[in-house]
Image 1: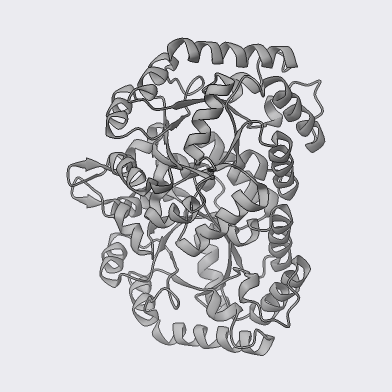
Image 2: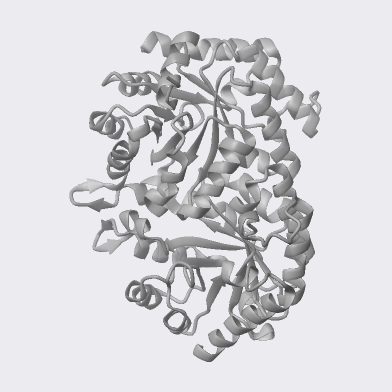
Length: 266
Length: 266
């Protein structure tokens, strides 16, 4: 039997003793002066990050915007990085895609088949059409935006229907669609009270951005997300990949520190 | 004075006598047997479509999923097509992007600066963070998803707050943010009653998908969208770019027929 995406998440998390996701959001402006600020320089830096952290983290998340800013050459870099990870860790295409069904199907081909990512993040403004084509292959995962970490997300996600907020509805919809055990949620770290409410609805795995620069609390996020016998994956980007002087030791130490803290709170 | 995006939309529409947008959603499965089904074959077909329709249509919309399915080579093809259009028509990146502010900023660089599109479609699930970085340059346009043409969009867009539906709130938010006169809405053709309600809220331009394959009515869409002294842009994809035998004459005729009908109903 081939594992479903959510089964694989659990297995890799146990094997690596890690609930850490490292956000490979490469940014020329944040690379120190001495580094090679070209596409190939970024490729080298990203591969060095991967080699020094592959045993420490569960997953790598590539926010597609950071690659697309360089046009097709950035897109090609993203493909090379996924190939380089080569199944050692779970890969997440953070593209927040979503469209009508036949178009979403093209995104599924692009992300899962052409590039070879294990999973994608999805923006659900267009409803279940934006989710269904992604979940047909049980080995591939879909993280649906539920409650986001940014303030302005609340403008939208607190709208109501039948006594439920939109973010609660999304969590329930995702759980109802989860027949292949390959759906998870994106739940930002910045609102512990609402996070507890979402965790009480079901035990879907969570990807949790918003720790660090955005002000989310690590201990609360780990505690809440792992309740209900589930899995909370903590994403850290800048604080790891641009740690200290950006050398391999600083990056390795930063990843280990985060992973140890997460395991201590679990 | 440099025109704002919405001023340019109006001027180009008057100059071309057109409210037609052609969706360049290339699809190998829909290309006839005799055509060259490679990246360069698609490039030739797309350039032939552009050359025979540039005087007939206001805009070209490239749904990014149809290019991304081919990986970085498809992404490069998309860049080449925008370069080939070269300002003759308005270009729309239909990517339904949206993220937290600093990430959305990277998408703005990618779409407007790196590729050179005139405008983008945006999915507003994360609120105004997903819109603000796109609207800083008044020459560049942002089409915000409001009411989408697909059935499952209603699952989300009819949620309520303070007596307003989410799609109405999005229309009002977009109008409030429209200080640079460069915001427009995506309003699907499939629900005339709700369309009338949105048109009564403000006079933002609309991009209207959902005609043809999705069942939207052309006459009603044109009539409603042009009320309130505004501009409704009708998108047609498959019914033009794969018209008849896919030869230049069939495509030219299909584009002319749509444009004439739209002008007749305006």
